[in-house]
Figure 1 (cartoon, helix red, strand yellow):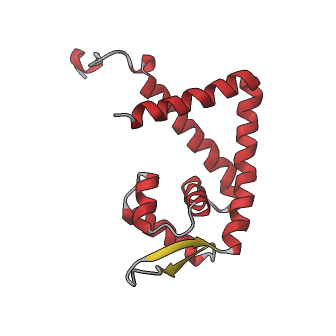
Figure 2: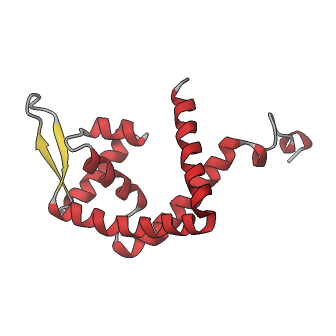
Length: 151
């Protein structure tokens, strides 16, 4: 590695907000995977189940956009969850080639089980930060979303 490789282009990564957000995301993902692994569900599958629960009838393409992943990745996850009987595809009422995604009762049960694990993580964070900082963090993260969506 030469000397130029060690020089940051714009500021040191540890001082950057986007880097801090990414590190927090990695830590959360690892902790969620650790919590959910005994239940046989990956954190990414938990997110997919939440999206379908909150917006039943999404198509695979809509789900891919919401999760910011490729349609192929969604198709793979949907197939796994469908094999487990946690998700089902139903015909779209107006478009015969489009399939809507819906949770099954097994999917709702899996979501309840996994959400209990996620709540344990949230409680750990809230205990560490305290109520005021937890509320402040939530507000700041909502503001980050608003700022980024404003571009």
